[in-house]
Length: 212
Image 1 (cartoon, rainbow, N blue to C red):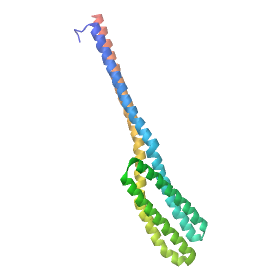
Image 2 (tube, one colour):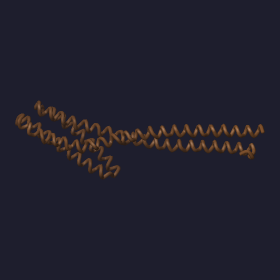
Image 3 (cartoon, rainbow, N blue to C red):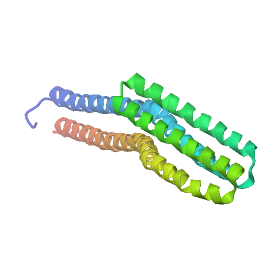
Image 4 (cartoon, rainbow, N blue to C red):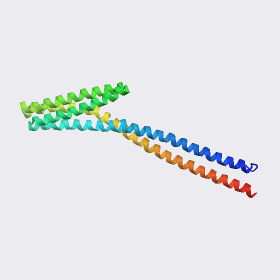
């Protein structure tokens, strides 16, 4: 560097700064694209599907609650409410199935078929139990409680991992956005400091050349 002219030193200094600025812009662009992709996936898929799965879990619980109420109080209105929640659950199955068909996800389609089958059995066992309580009395109804509990457990064994998976996908999307944003800030800070140091070095070398 000692033998370089002032013009060469200035050119070298500015070239270094320009390269660093270009690097900052490139890294920023790539990070923004990653954040945009993650945010779009979270907004259009991960979060809505996680919320939908959560609502379906809520409807499962409500079906059990109102069927039990119908059995104990002999109230047909509770049974009607249970069926309304069952319809809402089936709507969730329909929406997930549309997503699976869109993605051509055979594994998810098979999983949905299993869950839907388990739910229908769960609902049928529950209604049978409630009707038995209403028509044959408590002793006969208590006997039907065991098949209903077994159907509920079978449904939970298939649905709970399904729900957990979509909840985790939503968390992963959010974490990706946070991590990428943090990396962008850190990289920008490092490159910014480097550019500043290169500018100071270039100015110092130029000033030293002029004074000499």
